[in-house]
Length: 113
Image 1: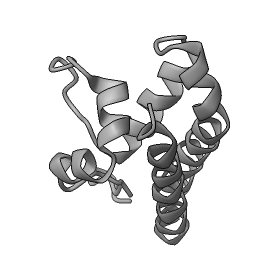
Image 2: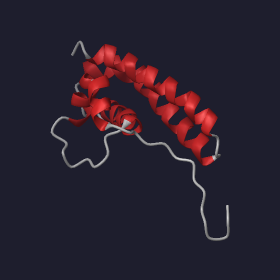
Image 3: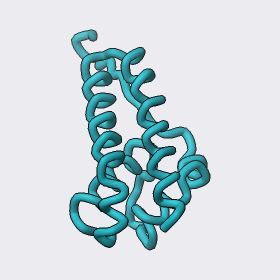
Image 4: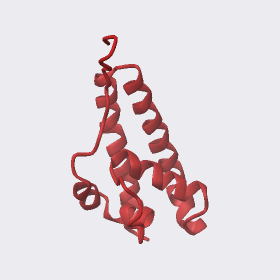
């Protein structure tokens, strides 16, 4: 990094529509009637599902089915943030595939609700 120029490694979702199409049941579960949420990307969805499960924002029977995978997704989200903070884009990239796999697994559960 320069004296004035800051270098950052970051991750963002290129298309929120693709997130909605990829995980429609999770999208609805986490963000139904939530137009006020400004960013609805992959990382935000993982956090929203975790929060919904842990905070009791969804019925307990549904939360119980999602809990283990939601915990794993949240752990991966934190690992991605850690890799980005450590300027490790390869590590973050590897973890991003794992996070998307976890969201796929959560979608497979949520589609039955």
